[in-house]
Length: 263
Image (cartoon, rainbow, N blue to C red; front, top):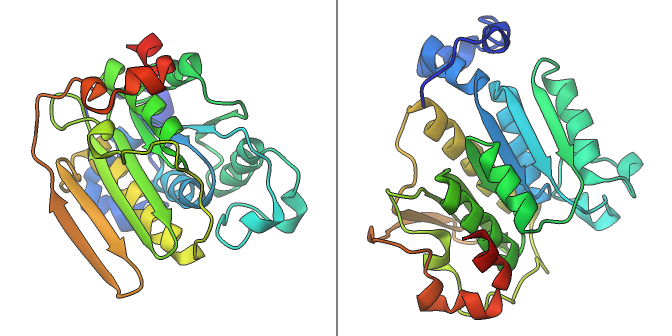
């Protein structure tokens, strides 16, 4: 991703602050981060960690999307929040906390339900989208919007002691629906240990940084599988295909008419 020498990007180029990563990213890579906009959709366990690391890395603008409020049963894994935040909108609290980490970056909080119009707006206004959601219905809605706008989507999912991550991009990989389970209505994280989402959220932040800076190799056409019980991390190769968002294969148009409205 080519950096833009804007005054805002140059203002974020703090050599002392980013001295430990400039040796890896270079000035050009750091400017690319400062010039980029990343949307984090879902600010639970995955999104909390991903957003923290993206803010810390110097991403110039973050769009934070989550309709929920903080609950007490979030606190064991959603590390952006404290007991004082219970009952408050996650997106708003997250924006305030991340500003405390890096006061120079721009942050937009969207505490609204995800719908086709919002998904498209997010995709159009972002360079990279981080899917930190907890259900496949919402994931596929964001996937369709990212696919239409040609924006990379960093996917992560976790439950119990397991998780997965991949990065999809139109013209490079298949879409997220290619690896969706047959029953997309099955959703929700019923049991999870905090460190599991910590690992996956960190990987998602790393993927977004790699996509933006060109440093390292993103998980294009690869699915990372985490088994924290063993522990082990395996990489499964995904066959590149000429993907049409898998609408015919999964018959998503029958179960998710909102996707048809995007495409």
